[in-house]
Image 1 (spheres, rainbow, N blue to C red):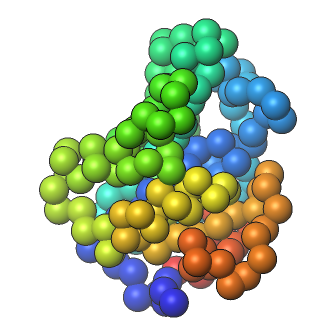
Image 2 (tube, helix red, strand yellow; image 1 turned 90 degrees about the vertical axis):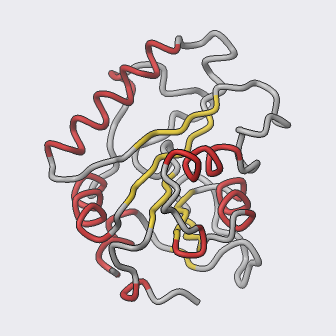
Image 3 (cartoon, rainbow, N blue to C red; image 1 turned 120 degrees about the vertical axis):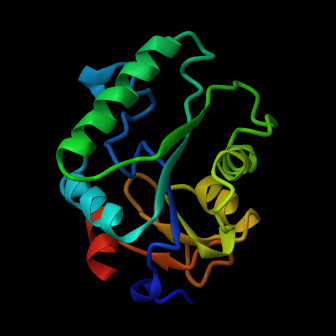
Length: 182
């Protein structure tokens, strides 16, 4: 079990987006910036994470682009605005890795590990054994475990699986509760 207080600037944080940083839309996608709403405490959490972790990445599946429900420009606009708000609050995201692929077998679609491997290629100092994945789905947890990360589940929109669970190292109510445990 990971002692969160043992993390330091040598650690890397991976975050899912919808249902972790911001509210999800039930049976729909966040299609533009006006749909995007941060969870309470998420901006404060990002500021705390930025003081603790060397690198912070968002890894997100965004199938709505391939379905034609939003454009790549819409997605870029959401991410630019999200990063701007996080930075204005004293936090940062080093990079957002996104799979817009429709096919679940795509190597870049979580739970597959392509997005994490891209991050490692771009930032070779990342050590997955010194990384944490925070997500709200079993796919997020599988992604993290497949790369050797510690995993934290946030039951925002999905019920908490029965514990102990082989893919989940810890469960927290939200990002701020994780940040306060550091």
